[in-house]
Amino acid sequence: MRIAVYGASGHQGKLIVAELARRGLQIVAVGRDRERLRAAAGDAEVRVAGLDDADRLAAAFRGCTVVINCAGPFTLSGSAVVRAALAAGCHYADTSGEQAQIKQTFDLFGAEAGRAGVTVVPAATDGGVPGDLIAHLLADRLGPLEEIVTAHLIAGSGRLSRGSLRSLLETAETLWSGGLGYEDGAWHPTAAARRTTMRFPGGSSEVPVVRFALQEVVTVPRHVDVRRVEGVADAALAARFAIPIDPAAIESLPEGPAAESREAQEFTIVIDAVARDGRSARGVVRGRDTYGTTARVAVEAASRLAADGAKPGVLAPSQAFDPAAFLDALAPYGLTWDLTVDG
Image 1 (cartoon, rainbow, N blue to C red):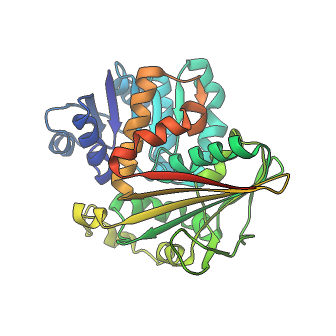
Image 2 (tube, rainbow, N blue to C red; image 1 turned 30 degrees about the vertical axis):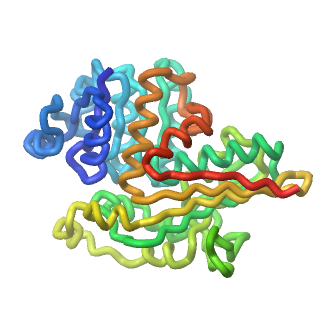
């Protein structure tokens, strides 16, 4: 099987190429700059195509089983790469964390992907996939839910790659406004979180949290019977994302955090669920290295789509993959998960 990586010469793309190579999978590196692609992809096949030529981009993906798109900002690149993947008959996954763009992928391409007979899984990231999978497992335990609150905490290096900074610039208004919440069958832009504090695992006290535009808010209601979903982040993390960025300065920054800095970073995803009968449960995912974990998540998703497929259409992770099996497949990389049900 061949896996195409669009944006293979970027920071996240290089990590994905390295993970594909480690697994012995055939790689086709796709992007705009042949020299940069060759430097990033080593002996892998290189195909040059940009977003401005739909036919050439589709041709670059032909013969591949899956396309992984890691070229942010996805608000600018996402739709073009999805369309090209569908035209080439390829399954698709991306590493987008851009909440509004993820919802747009579901809204625009569900029927088209179904007609093409391919599967599209957006938000194949360190947070988007584990959070979605844990939410599904909680719903299996509790039944119909009144509420899900999904929360992210990151400790350690907060430096972003150049690609992430570009994405942040494109989506700053949505991110800083708190993004979407889900209630009674629809997504709504809302500014204030219902939950204002949370005790994270291992913490001795409540931590302030604020509304945050998380991927799970878009994906979870597609497979969980839930009345309300909101995403929050610890206030300190949200404040780091709120620091103004000078667009002109981005290109002078390092491409991304060094390996030792990434390994020192720890992240925690908490999913709190309340059933309609009043019972509650919590799911927790812990790991290290958000960029490295995203690479492993995206490659695991692509490998499963290539080997086993999934029903055609745009799917949330839990609709495409077995939740527990996928989470367990990430255990060798230090990712842990557990569920606690009260009552």
